[in-house]
Structures are given as C-alpha cells and as structure tokens.
Length: 308
Image 1 (cartoon, helix red, strand yellow):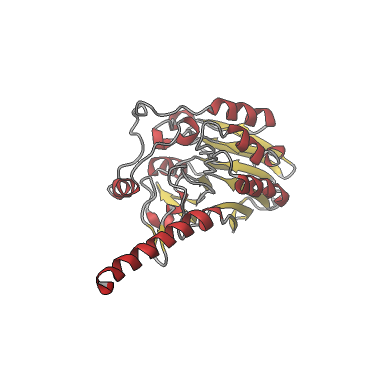
Image 2 (cartoon, rainbow, N blue to C red):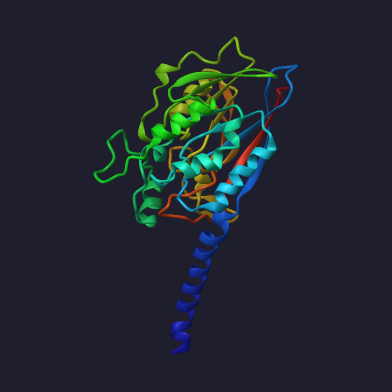
C-alpha cells in the first residue's frame, strides 16, 4: 500500500512546493537587469534609461509598490513605461503611488491590453496550449461580454500631468541636457490597436537619437520599425515567458516573437536593416496567475553608449 501511493503523493508534494515557491517567493523576488546598448552618435554622453513594464498592479501589493518607488534612486535620465500597468480596475491609485517618484523624472509611455481591459480567469493549461499553437491576442475583435473596462483614462491623465509623453500611435520628444531624444510609439498590437501608417517615415533627422516603443513585440511592428531604421526598439508584454524551464527557457511568448528573444537584449533584422531589441520580462503577473518560475520579475536599466 505504501509503495502504491508513495510516488503519486511525492509528485503531488513536489508540485505543491513548486507552486508555493513560484507564487510566494519568485513572483515577489524583484530585481534590476543592467544592460549596455551601443546606439548613440559619436560625441554624445551615455544615457541611463529605466524601463518598467507589465506591473499588473493589484490592490494590496505593498512590496511591489515599495520596490518600484525605490527605482527612482537610480536617477536615470528618463523612464520608458511599456504598458500593462493594471490587473485590477481599483489599482490606479496604487500604480500612481508606486510610480510617483519616477514620474518626477522625464518619461514616455505606451499602454497594453491590460490597461484597457481587466484580465479574465482562464485555464492555465489551455492558455499555454493556445499560445504554443500560435493563437495570440483578441484578433481585432471586441473583448468578450463581461470583460471589465479598466479606467485607463485616469492613468493617461496622471502621466500627462506629470509631463510624461504618451506614444500611442504617435511621436514625441524629450529635451534633455544631453540632447533631444525622439520617440515613435504604437498602441498595443496584441489587440490590434497599432497604426503604423500614422507614424511612418523613420527616425526624426533633427533629433540626436530616435527610439521606438511598443507594448507587445509582434513581428509586424518590429519589421516596420527596423526597416525604417530605428536603432533600438523597446517592448514588454511577454513576461519573459513567466513559467520557464530551467536550462531550457520559455515555452511561450504570448505573441509571434520566437522564444529565444522572449526577454533581454537581442537584434531584429528586416529589409537589410538591423535594430537592437529589448524586451522586458516585466515585474507583475495577471491577478489570476500570480506565479513566476525561473523568470523573476524585473525592471531594466539600459545604459546607452556611442555606437562603434
């Protein structure tokens, strides 16, 4: 009898321990990734850029709020927020509290689908299967009946009041002591709100540096930005795979990007042009799947230096 039930019970115990670790420890094990990217023109001083993404704030996440507040101590030259700030329609005040110190710095932002719509409860196994089969996003359709509309307008108004520049299918600039930085941004491709025809034309020739910003790194957007000659594209959305296998990596990216580039710095090539691509693994999860495994939550401090 002991042999008959011993193995299943051991497997169950290991699985339960893994879930407890993924939810109680790793999902709250915030860390900072540091990278150097050679994209600046000759003679321009290095720029320190803080990227935050996929906060997915739920009311009561005090540790996450305190960690985000502490990032202002890095004193970056500017902040890039690549969306999905919310996972709770009541979370706006806590997002603004968490980002308050960073909003005193120059910044730009785009929104993701979870800023517009609340998450829905889904079977995680079905989710992984669908993504592995290449089914991504809402395919341009309206969200299902019962989906909560998040108060994204409150976020937009607060960001704008703080001086952050919104980049949803538009362009913007930040004038810094080091020079003028131009940005071209898209609304979220995951729900087909991107309109590249509104921002086509390539980098601003009058700026010292032009960057591209989007929430979800779908290939159509990466191809367009790269073909137009942007040296660096910044995105989020993937959660770095969220549930990864040690020594193997991510199983899904939640978009059509390959899993080899699910997080961190890589490159993208299109039309004989090559751009750097940085995908943030983000610092949150959906409120319905509050776990991470082999993929800790993060923000990234990118130091931009002269290109060779």
